[in-house]
Image 1: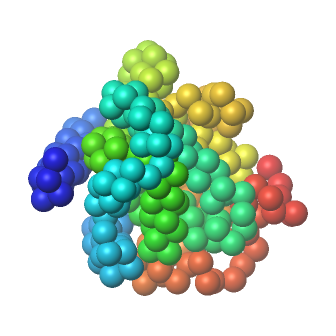
Image 2: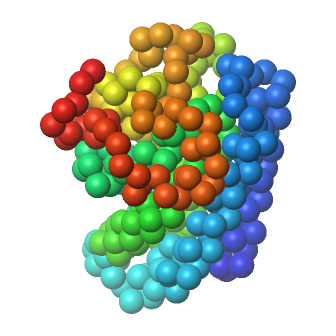
Length: 277
């Protein structure tokens, strides 16, 4: 697969899934929005554009390009032991998803990293654009972690393409403000992280914020004890966000970028000494 084709393929899936979820939110929304959609979308999508520029400036190659370099130089576990293509593909996608889960937990557990990640949680509404709302520094650190895993495992380029398409698609899906009948969601969340499952993670309550870390596969939360079925106040009445940033001004892209450097009492990090539930 040529890199140019990979970029076109990823963009096609991104805009296609985004359009489907955005339309779904209009026709069958789960919750009424409380904030200006124009301001939120301008800021949340603006940060995506900004992050893309930052990645291009910081890294000389994409994750897929780096995977090609690893493959050409026979680096990584799968290349050293001549693992079959199909096994390497399936194992890589699953292990990359586990790595993202562990990374997510780490960004909640380490107070300094939480200050970066909390920008994702300061959205006062929850919709398809929330899934792309991450601080540039977190995006850079995430890229370093991803490249490290590709290097250590020898992840095939095709597996990187599949994983990134899945991750982007599921992030938009499980952040969607979309209604799925409870009887369907009950079984669907056995195979994929659903909006009702992940929305719990965006609750204002600390113990709920520190649950349901998965983005794509739902198994890690169940296996590692971080799964929470429903929020205390219910899906429709739960409050989105964190206590420290409740003003609408923090939805502006300027405030989003400087949030990690703002002071204030914040006990959401898992390891915080003053944590309360």
